[in-house]
Image (cartoon, rainbow, N blue to C red; front, side):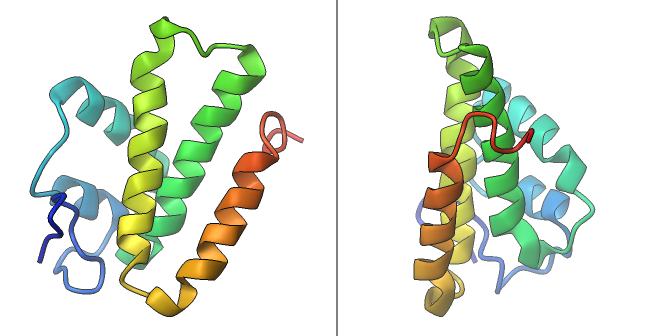
Length: 122
């Protein structure tokens, strides 16, 4: 089953990996963004589908950390900034399958993102 935004429900999917989940999105992002997201999720592609929320957050945080640490937040990095936004959005869409954990996940994600840049490389 898909949400209104095209995200595949982690709880109701027949795919078994993060990579399979991404490929199963019913409303794929535009080609350039889709290719960038696929490359960012590649290190997580083999993980079990239940790890989609953390995989998306981790991939988004890593990219945002790189952008902020390098000072690269100009128009030239718009695709990467859109990728960060999409990854965080996908993370919380997937996390919605476990509403009891949503508040804790949101608080943890907020703390991790607020600690950027450089916290991931330390």
